[in-house]
Image 1 (spheres, rainbow, N blue to C red):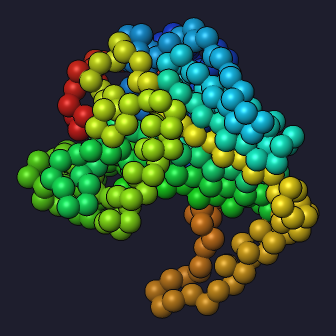
Image 2: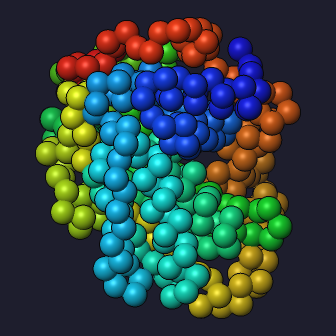
Amino acid sequence: MRISRQKLHQLIKNKIAAAGLPPEHADTVADVLVHADARGIHSHGAVRVEYYAERISKGGTNGAPHFTFEKTGPCSGILDGDNGAGHVAAKLAMERAIEMAQEQGVAVVGARRIGHSGALSYYVQQAARAGMIGVSVCQSDPMVVPFGGAEAYFGTNPIAFAAPGENDDIITFDMATTVQAWGKILDARARRVAIPESWAVDGQGVPTTDPMEVKGLLPVAGPKGYGLMMMVDVLSGILLGLPFGKHVSSMYHDLSQGRELGQLHVVINPAYFTSADAFRSHISQMMRELNAVKAAPGTEKVLYPGQNCDIAERESDIHGIEIVDDIYEYLISDALYKNSYDQKDPFAS
C-alpha cells in the first residue's frame, strides 16, 4: 500500500516515542527512516521500526543519552553517543563536521558508542545541502563471509558519498560492501520474495535464493569488496577505539545492551580547493553528461549514481510511499513489539 510521507513519518515517530525515546529524538529517527523508504531503500525504512521499538523498550537504546563532543584538533572531533539512537548521534556528528569544515576547509568527525543509524545517504546529504562534499562510513555486526573464508568476520560496512551541484542537484552514492545489505534480506523476508543467488549463502556456504535460509552474506566483487569492508572497519572501529570485525556486537544478541558502534564522517569544503560555484556547476554538468551517454543494448538510459533513488523519491512525493501491509498494520496498532528479535541468531527470521 502507499501512504504519504507525512503520515508515515508521524506513524513511525509515534511508535518510537511510545517505546521510550524523547519526541525530538523520535522525530529524527522517523526522518531518517522515511528518507530511506521514499528513496526506495525499504531495507532501512519502516521495516526496522519494530526492532528499534523492542531495543528501546528493553534499554539497549538509551532513551536519555548524554551526548558529548570533544574537539580533538583543528579539523577533528569525536561525538560520544552514550548508546543513544544512532540516527540522532550521527546527525549531530555531521552537523559538527559541517561547522568545522566551514571554518577549516575539511573535517573528520567520529561518532562512537552509537546504535544502528540507518541509511548513510541521509547524513552525506546533510553535507551536500550545506554546499560540502560528505563521506560517511560505519561498521556493523559480523554477517559477511570474507573472500576465501567459510564463516562471517566483517559486517556489511557501508560507504556513502554526496556532493552538491547547482540549485537542488545532489549526486549521492550509498553502498554496502556486500553484494546487498542485510536489510535487503529483511525486506525480501517481509515481502516473501526470493533473492538472487549472488547475494548470500546458506549454513553450508552454498548460494541460496531463499531469504529465510541465509546464514552469510557475500562481499561485493569478491576480494575488492572484502578489502573495502576491512577499510571501513578500521576507520569506524579501530580508529575510534571500538570493537572491530568479529568483536562487533550482534544486532540481536541482547537488546538490553548498547551496541557500541562507530561511524566516521569526512566533510570537505570545495571552496578551499577550487571555486565553489565552478565545483557545483561541474557536478551538475557531470550528471547531465552521464544521462547523455549512449545507452547499451537493453538499457533505456544511463543514470548517474543514485539517480534511481532520486526518481523514486520524486515519485513518492507525488504518489506516496509504498510499504508492506503487515508493516502498516503494525504501525497503526497499539503493540510496541512481539519479542521478535531479542536473543536471536544474527540471521534469525
